[in-house]
Length: 119
Image (tube, rainbow, N blue to C red):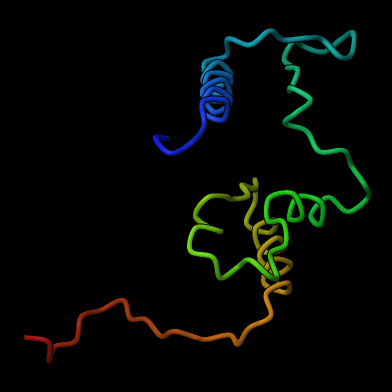
């Protein structure tokens, strides 16, 4: 964080503190339905995306802006990610992200054993 401006550093610090409070169960909770437990939290508006009908498209557009032109930049993928709750959702996001990258695909072979000839 040495090369970022003070405003960005403060924003990251505030977000980190919010995530820490969330993980420790220290955020104020609310009851949404009368018979429900008070286990709903208020997520800050600046962390929310408004639903435009296609949530995967919207998330990708937000996290990876101009991906088809910027995917080759050294830090483009390093500086961002999308976390999902299930492998099925990961597969859907990955397929959509890869469909936006116009380049030749490559398949790399791997092995899970060591060759006996490697000595």
